[in-house]
Length: 312
Image (cartoon, rainbow, N blue to C red; front, side, top):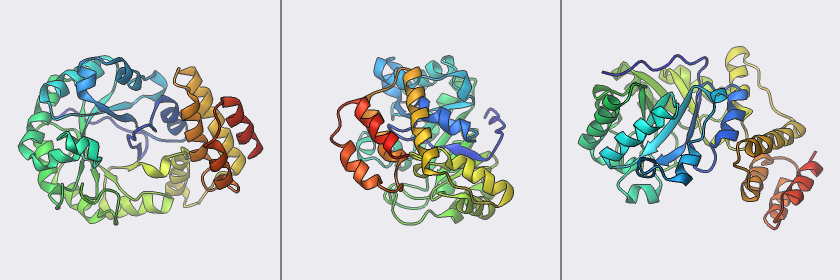
C-alpha cells in the first residue's frame, strides 16, 4: 500500500539534474522557494555497494528537507538495497527514474528503457515500496516511442508509488518538440496519487498555464533553473500576484558567490565546477559570451573570481 506523499508548502519542485543539483545548488533553490528538492540521478548499483564517489553525491543536510534522492538501475535487488541505505541516510522520499533518455543509461537497460518493460516497472516499484517506510515516487515519460502514459502510471500506482512525475514527452523525443500537457491531464484524471507535471515550465506564465491546463498537484522545474535558482521566487510571485519579477545582473553575480560559499562549506568546491557555474549564472547578461570564452582558458579560482567581480 502506498505511503502518503508529504504535504508540500508550495507547488514548485526542483528536478534532479546531472552535475547540477548538488547540495549547494539545492540550498539556493530552497532559499528561493522550491518546496521540494532532489539529488541528481544516482546509480542504485553504486549505492548498494556504498561507492564513496556516489555516496558523496548523496550528501544532505536538515536545511534542505524535505529532500528526495533519485535512483536508477534495472537490478531490482540493488534498487531495494540502495533505497534502504538512502532511507537510513535521512532522505524523505526515494524516487525511481523510469524516464531518463540519456543514451548511456538507456543502453544499460535502465531509465527510459524500462518503459518498454512494464512488468519490470511493476516489480521494481512493489519491491522498493515494500522495503522502505518512506514514500516512493517515480519519474516517467509518456512512453519509450509512443504514448502509454496512463497504463504506466496505473502500474506505478497499483504497486505502491505515492506520487508520479510525468515528463510529457517520450524517451525517443528527448527534449525536442513541445511537451504534451494534455497527456499529463489524462494521467491526473486516471489515478488518485499526486501528479507532478514536468516539461516546458520556464516562467511564471508557463507555470500557471500547466497548472490550469492539467490540474496537476505540483510542477517540476528543470533546465530553466540551471544557473537561475531565482526562478522559484519568480514563479511563486507570479502565481500569487500575477507580477513578473526579474533579477538584476548584480543579484545574479551575488547568487554565484553565495553558491561558491555553500560549495566550500559542504566540501564540494572545485575550479572546474566554479567555471561551469560562472558560465551558467551569467547566461544572458551583457558581456556573457565574451566572459564564457575567457572562462574556458582559466585554471585558478582567483581568475574566475576576478572576472566575475568585473561583471558587476
